[in-house]
Amino acid sequence: MTLNLPNILTWLRIGLIPLFVAIFYLPDGWVPKHQINLIATALFGLAAVTDWLDGYLARRLSQTSAFGAFLDPVADKLMVAAALLVLVDLDRAGIAASLIIIGREIAISALREWMAREGKSGSVAVSFIGKLKTTFQMSAILLLLYHDSLLGLSAQWLGRWLLDLAAVLTLWSMLHYLRMAWVAMKDRPAG
Image 1 (cartoon, rainbow, N blue to C red):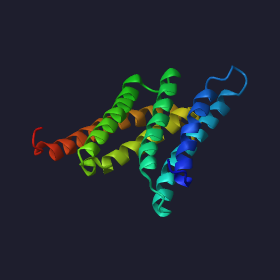
Image 2: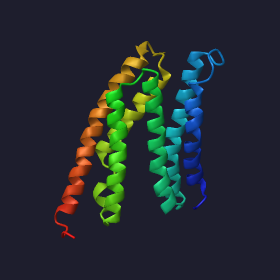
Image 3: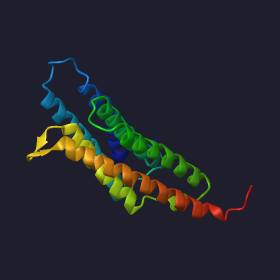
Image 4: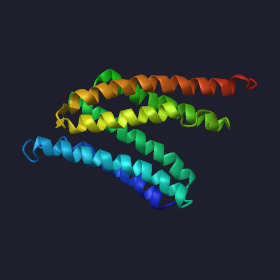
């Protein structure tokens, strides 16, 4: 395992998960609800920033590694899944949208692993639709975590709407990746 700044940031993101989850389950009265929402939003926001930053630094500092390439998407999926599970438990996120998003992450991770083993990992590289899905998904989660009114708008309403839109984009991106994998593998000799 290579220990460099990008990998340290990825480990930090993983380390934030239990803290992020625990803040919602502190005994009543320890922290006011509004502050809990602010802290959770800040922790998730910090995790999202480290997600971008670790990849940027790995490329900029030429510190990419096989371990980092493996750990980074795992950290992302763990953070998103933890956030969605907490939000469903708090009745802030819909079960269907959350299951679609989590299920797609598992399916596409497995597809990418399989395609890499087949030497076709470029066939399922991140696409524009995948990046758009991630943008809507992260925005939705941040709004749902914040939960309070934001500039006169209901963060809850807007967050639910964006999460539903992210779920639609999730299905679309999954179909895109499956189609790309199918095209890459259809001419492969049986065996």
